[in-house]
Image 1 (cartoon, rainbow, N blue to C red):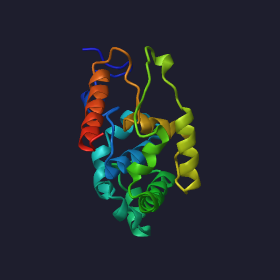
Image 2: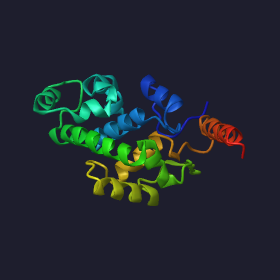
Image 3: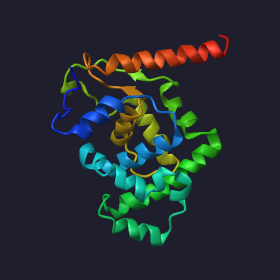
Amino acid sequence: MKRCLGVDLRKPDYVEYHDKEWGVPVHDDRTIFEFLTLEAAQAGLSWYTVLRKREAYRKAFADFDPQRVARYGKKQIEALLKNPGIIRNRLKVHAAVNNAGRFLEVQREFGSFDSYIWRFVDGKPIVNRLKALKDYPATSRESDALSKDLKQRGFKFVGSTIVYAHMQATGMVNDHVAGCFRRQPIIAAYKNKLNEATSRAGI
């Protein structure tokens, strides 16, 4: 079974994440907020470091409910900074709480964060054809545009590299390498959903 380059088979939880989640289009707002928070926490670290702390993050950040996180005050923030289960970086913790508030603002403006963020890829995944590690981009024109817009809206820790990793994680970009067993099933599943939606709309 061929997987993407760099997937460490000695790390079962990392393999499971690659096999079940990475690159699958996400349209649930709470899950989108989860990945935004985790990707920001990853800044300067490896994704595996954050992945191992994911359950602790879910408990610490109210199962990634942005309404609850946005209400975190000094008491909750200080508790987070003492929580050994998460990355205790003051800037990143404050960014998570700040971003929850900005997330709610976007929801109010666009009806959902999903409606807002997928506009940056015209509502459908970008499918890249990658063959080697050197082919993986760190940023893209779309991540540059999304990063710039998020910053203008007051989000923190949303540089283009972090945003591109978020787009990969949530399926806005399909960066599974050519030959990876997950690449085509994700493409096929998306096309099936699109065809179903078209049929229901009578188009």
